[in-house]
Structure formats: C-alpha cells, structure tokens
Length: 403
Image 1 (cartoon, helix red, strand yellow):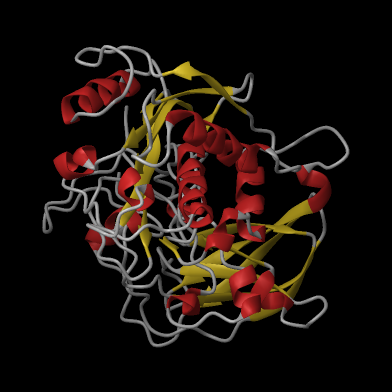
Image 2 (cartoon, one colour):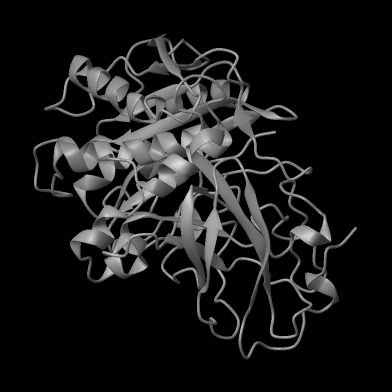
C-alpha cells in the first residue's frame, strides 16, 4: 500500500494538487484508528541525492543541511525517533547512480521507494521533476510523505526539494533565505515522519503579532516565516504522541496529557467531522494562549468517506469505521490548564496543503471556548463536548459510518 505526498507552498501562493492521505494530526490512520508510524526498533534510514541542490548549493553543503534538518525532529526530548543518512541514493531501474536529474530517473527512484527498498531525499536543481509531475515549481518548495506501508508501519518515504528557490536567480522564482528554505524542508520531514498539517493562529495568513508567530507550527500548511525552522508546542506534542519517549529523564508521559471529546452538530447527537479543534493554554495569561496551543481535526481517526453512489466517491483505505470516531478529537498537550475552541479549516488549505483528509466549511458557527480544563501529565481529560450553533439537520445516509 502506498500514499503520496504533502507539500509546502510559499505564503499566498497558488496550491498544486498531489494525492494525499489523512488526518489532521497523524498523516495516515489504520483501520483500527491507530496511526501509521515508522518502527523505532532502529533509526530510520534515508539516502540523499548525489548532486547539487542548485547551481549555488553543492552536494556537500545541502547534505550537511539535510542532516541538521532531520536532527530538529530527532532532538525532541519527549520523542523517541531517530534518523540516519545511509549514503547516496541506490541505483534503481533507469537511475544508474549519482544525480537524480531527469523525470525518468526520479520515476525509477520513486518506484523503488514505493517498493519499500529505500527512502530517497531528492534535489531537483532545475525543477524538471516538479514540472513532470504537474506541480507548480514557482510556488511549491518541496513535497514529502511515505511511499510504502505495511499493515502497521511506514516502510519507506521520500523528500523532494525544489532547487529553484536556492539558485541565486530572480527568475522564474526569487530565492528565499537559507533559514526559510530549511524551515520548509523541516516541515516536509515532518510529513516523512508521519505528521499532517496543523492549523493554529490562522490569522497569520494576514497579520501575525509576535506571540501568534511564536505559536505558529512548523506543520502549518504555508511557509510564513523562517522561524518555522524551530518546532512549536504543537509540533513537539504530536511527534511525541506518535513516537513517545518512554524512558530517561524527560518522557512523554511525564510531561504531556490528553484532552478528548466530541464535536456535535446542533442536534447534540450527530458527530461533526473535519472541524479544527484547538487547545490553548491559559495558566499564566500574558498571551500564553497564543504561544502554547495544540490542534487536531475532529474525526481525525475516521475514514474520510465510505463510498457514495451519489457523488461516486470510492471508499478510503485509511481510517477507522467506528461511528464513535466520526467527531472525536484527541489533543496531546503539555500538562497545564486549557480552553478548547473550534473553527473551520481555512478554505485556502486544500489538496496537498489540506488540514485533514479534505477541506469543508464548518457547519453552523462556533460556540464559545470550553474550559478551563486542567490536564495532568500522563492522564486524559475526557468526555468534553462541543456543540456547533445553527447547523443544518443531521447527516443523511450517505454521510453515515457505512459498513
């Protein structure tokens, strides 16, 4: 089983379409509701392109930067995940060795990734790969995600970088800073590791005060600032939930707890899926709610669709079919006191920049935040309900849980 990638776009750019999985928290979810993750029995092995990122960034330089980008995730104290550069990309089919610099060579390497044989990091120095895939090379900095899955684990994955953003030329795109480019690829390595996008402080699309900027996730769908090269509370919480550090001085269970509940339509019975849910910390005031926040999409475990004879949608292979998961939210948070609020996923976040399996407008309007909710490390504060205001009647037979 294989899935393709999420992508990072520059702020306000047009979005390009690439097939993707789900879920607004973890990137892909199994039928039992558990996320697909890499095995942590050993370090995740990846291989890098033996060519330059661009005419101004040689192989040795970008190799060093890539290792440092993976280290950003590996260095999370409460997460148990490690990565190792195993060497250069192995030959595969039409790709003999060296620089992956044609569409045919990339296709061969990607197929080898889909076969579970290796996890390549590809440098597209002249954007021919992006062009061949139909991805807008003037707005998309990179894309990444798993290539192959077993019944429970990711087996291989890829990261592809657009060298046009680092080639020293003003056309066809203007370069971005090294810090900004690396922030975008750190984001892609989050997808490679199994994380989906996060929507927190979405006002930053238009105006972003300093505290809001501090809370902006690396996994926000758009690159807004070079400071996204530093992980937010949301990024740390989710990578730690997927790969919890169980031993040592700083463990996930010793620092984090969980807030869980259900989002309902106005009838108080029907679960509402694909609503963005944000827990904001309110212990100390001083705008802590803007800097310390973690989010998830309601129903993140649930299959995005089960087949619909009216729309022609086919059943998704990802996610739980349990009706109780349709509107469920579970948010990992550092121990503390939180309010929980809901909002619609922004309409700009679609296709490869989606938050969750696909974008819909939240039905009705959001109620006032609930809380404060006190969360202790190693525990779950459960049973919280959020009922939307003024929604249409409950879902029809084709939106139900299915077989």
